[in-house]
Image (cartoon, rainbow, N blue to C red):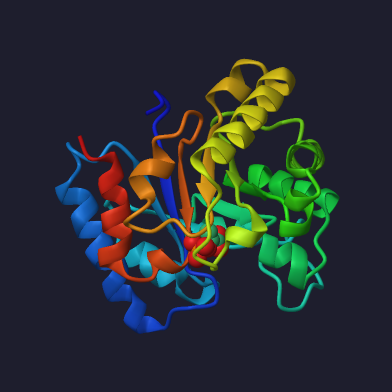
Length: 253
Ligand code: PEP
């Protein structure tokens, strides 16, 4: 395991009504109870409609909250969008930028994602910037090229170890039950670390790199033990507190 303090973040995507509050409360209570044994920061990115109510309900605990996306502007005529400042006011400490579902559904480019990450920093939020190759790109031997290109394009020059987290999420592993081999995860994370250190120096060395894509209770320990894997971005398995907590157990001492 790495010496950087890991982060395990649950991305609820477009799931969750008020009933989801009890899942968040269960995570909050377990995280508080495991304070001395769980060596990871824990975060949930609920839908925007639940962010404020969850952050209020879990106030004072160790569980933190993130938005799933933000607009690059602070305010204005952008119907349906949410700004980083709004997320911050609602209780978020971070926001996901450039999830592959945003890249696919909303044609988000690296330049758009970079502007969103800059907006996060402007608002005082950490940006969790997602990168990852498609299956076609992996089969074509382009994984490292794609990852380096996305990293270069999507990360702002002002990224630091405190305000930015990188999430490597192979697109073909998201929601499919498929995961790359341990050797493949190690290879990509080593490349990301090398790119970050070359560009950001000590900040790049200390920036957390999460793995995301079908992390489940039964594969978490193996995936999260890989060098340069500093935590996980978890989709489906974060919707059920018992599964999410089982993943967190990978970090129990
Ligand atoms: C995600 O959407 O970021 C994700 C990793 O999803 P899942 O864990 O369901 O593959």
